[in-house]
Image 1 (cartoon, rainbow, N blue to C red):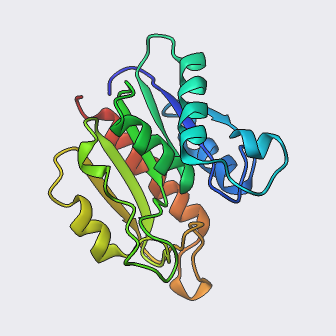
Image 2: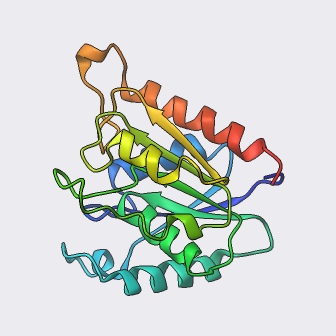
Length: 193
C-alpha cells in the first residue's frame, strides 16, 4: 500500500480501545502504520451493551473522517469492530483496505447463523486473521465464504482462540502469535494496491 498508512482500529463487543488485545495489536502494528484506536459510544459511556450496527458504523465513519489526512486509510478492528468496518466498506464507505482480527463469522456454537451476506460486496483489499481454535469462526465455513473473493487474504493463526491466546501445550506463545501478525501485515501492506 505504499506510504505509511493510517489504521483506524475498532474494539470488540466486550472490549474498549485500551484493552489488552487492542494494545497488543497497536504495539506490533505501530512500526508499519499509524494505529488510531477509538471507543464506540456504548463503551465510552461505560455500558456493556453494544450499540446497534447502524450506530457502530456511523461512529466508525465519523472517526475515519476525523483521522483522514490524504494518506492511505485502512479500517478494521477486533471481532465486532472489524465486522462493523467490513459492513461500512460494503455500504460504499471509501477506504483503501480492511484489516480484520478474529472476524466473528457466526455466534459461538451456532455456525448456521452466518454473518457473511455483505462480504462479497467488499471492493478493497482485505487481510483477515483468525485463530484455528476460534469458536466464532469455523475455518471451513470462513474459507467457503471468502475463498473465491479476489480481494481477500485469510491468515490462520495456528492454535489461537478468539482472543488470540494459545494453549501452553501448543509450544507457541502469544508473543509469537503477535509477531506473526506483524510480519504478515507488513507483507500485505507492501503489496501494490
